[in-house]
Image (cartoon, rainbow, N blue to C red):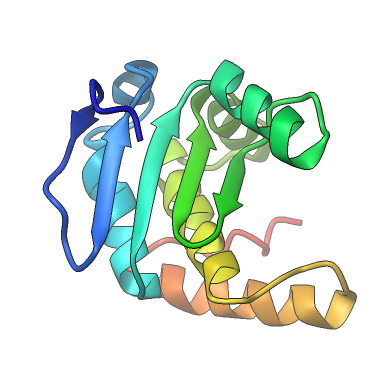
Length: 146
């Protein structure tokens, strides 16, 4: 985490830092949304709300993919989200950006807990878990529109 970033107090082993100020234009209080979503999913994490360039750099370095992606998860407990990708996906899918942020934080938390989506059965189990956790936050099923 970037120590010069705006940080939120840790809650149940969850810290949130905002590296990219555009998150504040995208959603109201992104730190609270990320912290609450992580809390619902359970576990501890350091969450960085970053820009596309940061996520692209990390994705290229650690996964060999030279492109920005919505969320990256690194063991033992780091989750990094790209503001531009999250905003574009929310617009394209007709979702509230705050709901999409909550979904992706939960998605990252589940990866940290060993869930994956490489195989169809695993993907379905992960989607069902995400849907149940999002419902606890009042967020609609993100898979229904697909």
